[in-house]
Length: 201
Image (cartoon, rainbow, N blue to C red; front, side, top):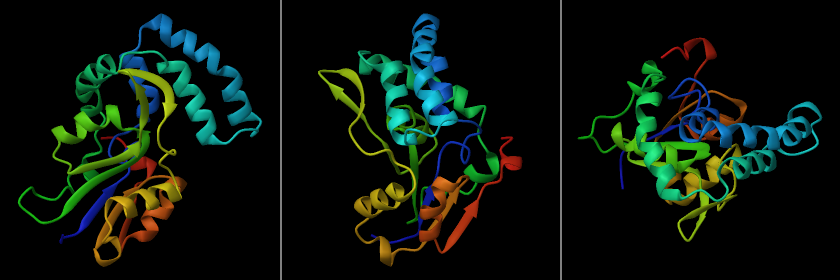
């Protein structure tokens, strides 16, 4: 395998905003969404206000409240129609750096958001791969839990190393917008930090 690896964070880097918030607004019924928000308030208080629980634990608890028991096929269909919503939030200065399809370069999204709503958009725009937090599915139903660690911080590096065994011998260019992307940016010969001021699409 040869060519440069171009690694992109997703939320706040390729698209403005947070898809973890945007997707349930798009995919869930108002009743389901409101109930999930109400159930998540204690978790949000412990996480955001009191700092009593880790962000990854809080995220999985909220994910459980949102998606536990839902058919995965239904959410996958919602992910297809989510493409248009994400396209209205594209940060053009970043997506314009995608390598042409006829080069040896590899483009990969590395995201803490669940892969199932990123994959259709990524395929639509010609990305080669998506490395992300994976949702647990049993008998075609979302359990509300994650089947992998939350893909943020050092986990982004670990998952890239798993995906690309020859990573150390490859040239890497990376884009990110938050402190959670710093380990991935640290891998890159050419890192790019996307400022909030540039997240206007």
